[in-house]
Image 1 (cartoon, protein in one colour):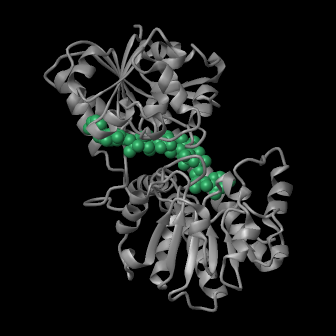
Image 2: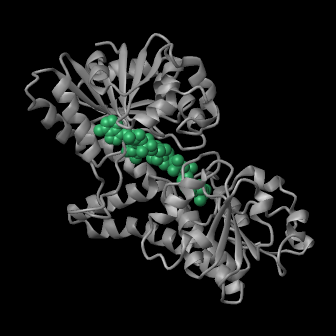
Image 3: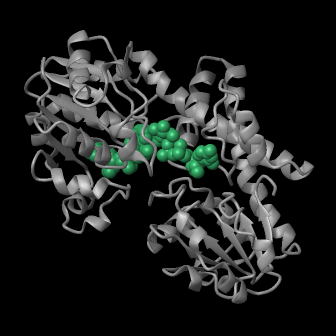
Length: 459
Ligand code: NAD
Ligand code: UGA
């Protein structure tokens, strides 16, 4: 079995970068990425490389090199599936918003649609790879649909979860900590492993059974999210006691068993996956009647929601318990720096709370489009505010911060550090407050400029 021709279904934050790097590292492979959304495919095919659907450092350069050579973007899903020997399923698996498991379970409708399509149109042997993050045991669902189709084609199902983080996707794909392949067919596992061996040392390629691979992906995200909630829980204790979370993180993380990474206190974790994957893990544990296990992991989310809420509450409290008609400058909308992704960004929830207090928000983010910000706020329920009069999005940070009463730093974009803080101070209402939810400006001596500076985790 040899992989020569790949079709990836789903041209999103995983499909796009993953296949671009694969195409670059394996010029002998022909790769087609398909998507149900024609505008997205059009944008991936556009000459305007600055406005690809996914912003990732280094990605546009790779796309420019491989697109039209061995990487193609297409809306012809049937043909692309038929032509490929290997299919990656990289579609979204969001939290269910309806029916059984609403608000907890992963919605597998997009995965199932892909599998049914594969079963329907395939004419010869295929390796079918779960790239999307899915609940443990999903491969049995996939196998059942494929095996019971009329096609009589031979299918080999593998699990090959993706561990890239947004903002560092290219780096993570070029030099991953590990590649995980789960499956039953040794032939198929070896064929996929051979592809990765084009640039990844063999010892980094871990092979397991299907269920271990599927579950490991959920558990990896749960452990990472737990670390953020652990440090965030302690950040509140630091603020109460006069300890400093950066110093505590350094002291604790210097223990080689704990390690220094992923211990940055913040206004809470966001992103499309931590919350959804934790909810899914909790749901799975409960479905096996493992309530103690489910409660344990649920606490990670409880702390995260608490962290976002208490940050907004602190702004209200420090601004004399009223935000009505006060202008707040919001710096950053993306869920982390170096991405244009805003899914589950803490900025959305903090802003929602401030708007419900009748604040007027002046927002700036270097990569997120204005329409996205309005859509994010529009999608929330319990809105006691008017977006048209209370929200303004700016393309220039100085305009966004002009005459505001306070600034909330919600994404750790490096460029915010380089702003002219003296000039900003001069143009603000006094007292001029800064609430730093990312500990981004701790070494800027903002108090010396006259600011009242509050930082998550204490100074
Ligand atoms: P995304 O929403 O950015 O992209 C998914 C794409 O799939 C969309 O463009 C959508 O139009 C397309 N799609 C959905 N159903 C389709 C169908 N039936 N046929 C064709 N196209 C279809 O999602 P994403 O962030 O790329 O995440 C994809 C999966 O990877 C999820 O399961 C996620 O948990 C997982 N994951 C994401 C990341 C990340 O950093 N975003 C990292 C690791 C794993
Ligand atoms: C995360 C994982 O890191 C990836 O391994 C995984 O593949 C991916 O989820 C996924 O499955 O989608 P991502 O969400 O893109 O990646 O980004 P992270 O760097 O993990 O950051 C997640 C959130 O945690 C961000 O809001 C970030 O600001 C926050 N965070 C992270 C902190 O607040 N403190 C930290 O120390 C680290």
